Length: 81
Image (cartoon, rainbow, N blue to C red; front, top):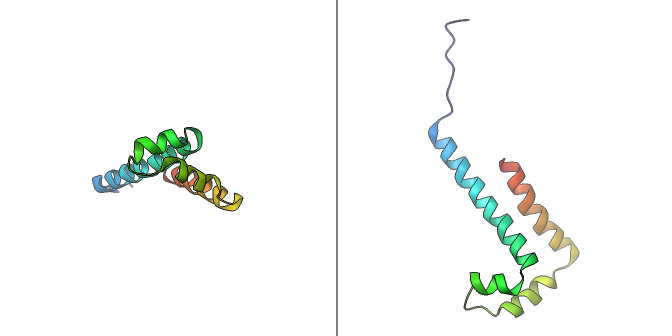
């Protein structure tokens, strides 16, 4: 038993995991800011876009699409953690 070798987690796995967590965290940030700041956030993120028109589009999402978007970003982050 004392001669057993313990395997270490490879460094590239930690790097990919950290990048995936940051990617999913930005999705959560984008969802939160779109839902709370609305057109002001869209203006800063996409300067050439009609922010009011985009927010009208987002606010017209059916309930199932809004729920899917929210669940997708938050559960995606939870799955990474």
